[in-house]
Image (tube, rainbow, N blue to C red):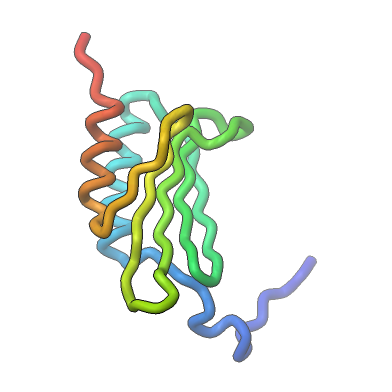
Length: 109
């Protein structure tokens, strides 16, 4: 078993979702769970990228990947949404992508 130590190497070295962004993502995720679209999620943080994966099944590939990445020369963030079997959507605002995500999983019966 490995222990996690907090040293100079781990401090502020990774990109994270803000609390407001994470609240919006989890709100959208909870709608998908209540509709039966998703059952699991995962979050991955890298130096210049943060990913939120939404899964229909725990052992399957992700149905949806929401990515926050940082531009190198500017202090701007780009959000990307990749739905299964579809092209990517890019935006500077996370709300634009969450509207697409909510609209995509809206079903009329």
